[in-house]
Image 1 (cartoon, helix red, strand yellow):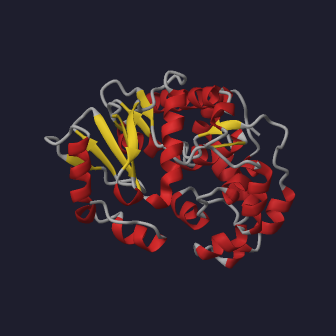
Image 2 (cartoon, helix red, strand yellow):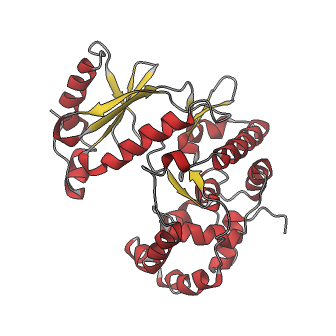
Length: 309
């Protein structure tokens, strides 16, 4: 009953249309034992995700993104009990019609940190970002070898080289003005990305939208959304941290890195930003603090500096 989604065009048409998905979702819920529970769709996220009451979450992946479903399942299984903050418990996963896959998981208590953030006192914000840094340090210390059969890329350096070759065109497609575009090749040529660090399990999108906080205790209650996970260099995970957790605040980023136990060169982090799978520099320029000078070096310090230099 779920409609076929085998192309990007079908994805754009079908996935946002809850009416088109609703019959298939209700059929799947009945099959899973939730016939009497109304599936309430979360408004955010790229995949269709539904709350089933206050204890369960159902996440759906079309055939186009089957690999994402397999990644989410394996990473959730692997991480149970391994991080200082909870991740959802995997309860069941499987296939349904037209190549769709589902993941049924526990629902973490609380609300998204992005929603809670404006209400949080500074002391709670500081404690939360410290907990984020500590959790990320533990994540990166785990042995990723058990996940190499499902997580890529197989060759991290080659993957970055491929993105580097398209870096200018990618940002041009997103509407980056020419005065920024012309700086990208020289900037990337000038940054030496570290190659001798051990490869780590990466979340790749650690951001306020993927962190859960209890509104009463104001404590972190979870980290969600592991379908974009990869194995690669740990600095790559600080792209999301700088853009979507500290959001260009050097004091907060400094706290995170202190809790993490390592600092990273701002220019290295901006280079990873330009090479990130979902890189969108025009969006970041709209949402984050403006650099004092219209240069990538100035941008690197503004978004990824800690003010300690």
